[in-house]
Length: 568
Image (cartoon, rainbow, N blue to C red; front, side):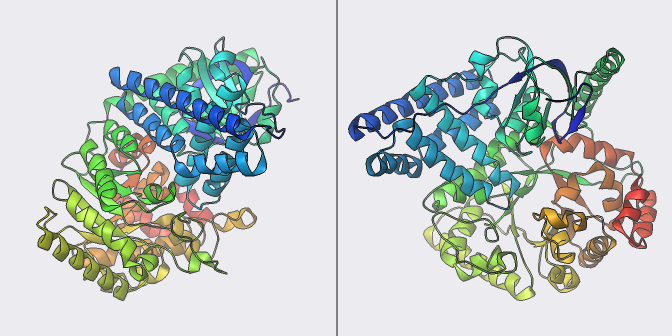
């Protein structure tokens, strides 16, 4: 049992303050694990339940489209694709037939296997898709078992506490009843988190198991901006929080009013402000928050959630759909970036002792042109009607860039011979993630059209610190002067050759670091949609001269702590 007035902290997932009674929700259906007597009956029951769930999701998707909520509807279109995944269905059928499992148990096991595989990936966005798998599987299980969903549980306005929530849970309940939600797990790029931001539902995630021990009906004050949940706060604290709630609502309206303002410093320096996205849904949200394009379109999701490789037409459709959401703006697409902890079901990667130092990113693409070449063809074709720019991940040497450009020219020649429309000459850039690339930036800048600094990997490689290892998390410091010096070196080299430099890692979305990055010479900042208004405000508050002075002091600092002190 939690103590009165205790505060627990997690990740700020969706801004806002919610004050109300706690409701504990366990989305996992109770499943009979007894061995089934009739394989045929259980297969029929499973197929019928899947058909019913598919129809229900389709109806929700259509309703959302009818009321103009296209971005939300596309999340559920993706859910229908997950539900119809042959791998999921075939695995469940196999468990029924070969192991005698009941339908609900079998689909649960099959879904959990997929979810665990996604959670093992070293990519927050892709790991977050595990929640979507569990969501659709849970709906099927509830059809089979008659268990209740959130809509049947949430009969009064409340702050919902759960281990995790799926998009269907959020969209199934009346908005006025869902004051906010607090999750033990969750991800910042999960669809439920994206929906919470879009719908204005305050949310805190990553609170740990502790939050599940809160007693139901306890009064909670959830702060989705600070990432905190206060348990049974006293009257004076409630009054303060209600005042803060009103102030936050006013500030949010002001940020929305500033969406159309240019991202320019006080002295007139223009900084391109673009978004990191992976789907057309996210691109639309980015447009609503005033993104001037896409600085990082992740393409891995198209490859990872399927048993086969996507063909050229499917890839082109994704790029065109994202570009359509942000017309007449640059769309920078990162070629397939797998390896490390990210594996393709259709293309198993070999075991490696040091996978993050091994066969990953562009290294795979160059050695497997049968994977990279169709993607380059799709990018060129999508670029016939949009400003598609191509970005290469995990570049270490100039020779890799040259090999990739040669493949791009091969793709161009093929399309020309086939008479297919394509981009004239798209920009080809490289990600600066490896210290060697930063140290060799001058040579790369002679042949690359732009740079984009991936501060997440650049930090872990510079500091020899696995960012997923909790035991050395204290060493993972993007503001370490060593990392900042590599960023400054990259910008200086790029500008000597007339190239622009973007930052698309987490540091690019941190408004506290905006002035520093401008001072280091960064021309473009790319971040998640929810951070766009905050970074825009930071750009507009900055002065390039003051930023340059701040950068020089940061570069002369001895530690990340000293840099943080400079940033206030």
